[in-house]
Length: 365
View 1: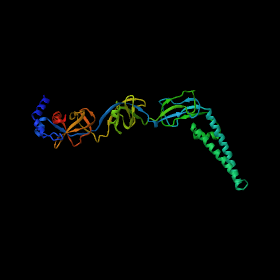
View 2: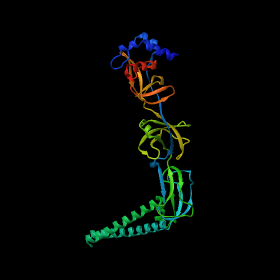
View 3: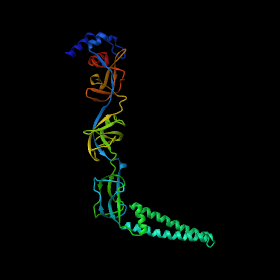
View 4: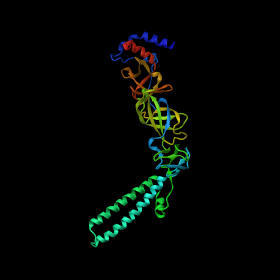
């Protein structure tokens, strides 16, 4: 009945439309506005807007994941830590018996002995050179031999350090000459052991993967969203994990569309510790716009559709103007608008149907 009354009022006052401007701004008197039940409301700034929901997964940033490989070939004699355990940087996580390791120590001691001999020869010939007993050329030959031995010792020392031998152990080896038959595999960072590729007693070759360790202080959340929605997401938007109080901030929007399901990857970094979340975990997320400086909110009832486009009526000094709007989402009874209106505008929220009918009578449709 209410809608019928509105249509009757429009029909009885069809002559009012003679006052309409050529640009289709509808002009009514105060009495007519009251009869049509037109009411306006000023938009408000959006504090948050839900853009979409999507599935996601927890991943470790590549820079925080480490592959620990066997420095030399040998046999796994002991495994000190299990998958899932936390380890500190430098902690021994496995022991390898290696004949190659023994060989490196022998080479180091041999090169060290040759260096000491070359150094003694160089000192003696330096004195002889100063006394004119030998030529400078002979001294240069001895100097060249010393330099070669020096480089050989440094190279052998570096190979032992890469194999896991620390400075105190190097000094012990140099002092006692007693060789270590086993080498310790050490954790390169503080982290958690995510995977183990070997078993006790297994023979491994040089550079064979043995453990995966990750620093879980920083995690990423990667969500897959339909490609048509990806254009609405911006860097800095929030991904809220359902059934959790943690959120992540968007740091990357993929430029590649997955051909199998036409989705785009959106990556976010957690603002704080992602408690209760683990790498590989599947989650559901809500994507929320955080920069609302250009977003305004009006009741959903203010919007009308024509020609598959969205419009609102705005009250101006000349009458009621029809404006096309671009929306970015809705929450309950409210609509979030990206452009088309300004904060100072007065948007029609009641009587929209009457204004639409009057506008269509002007030839709008």
